[in-house]
Image (tube, rainbow, N blue to C red; front, side, top):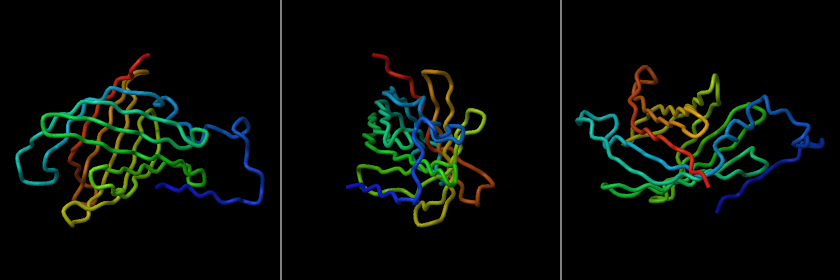
Length: 178
């Protein structure tokens, strides 16, 4: 169960019509809808193993929440190596003028530490800290809107504090039209 809690600030909250959207709170509006996803996942990231990429295809459905200041991505893909069912909860933080992206893999039901950031010059860049095999790593997530009906998502890990990055997840989404 997910609980969202809001606190009153003492003043009236601005209405959607009067609030500014220049601060980034509508950055994901373009993505609302259903997408066909083609995914490549590095089998053993940050290892000395040869690069083996696993292939998956399926759908990604983005639904708006709370007047589009939040959204949830339902992600379902499968391939020869199995299935990935996941959620991505994205929340806009107006005070910081940034987004937090928190992923959950439905296999284990655990939330990953969030990555934080926003869009600049058409590219979303989000950073955070996590662990891989018990060691601390940095995480970078990039979102590039290739066109009106295509987007690219890349995740990379760094074991050296962000000096070098190894891409381990590439998804290309194409909008599903009704």
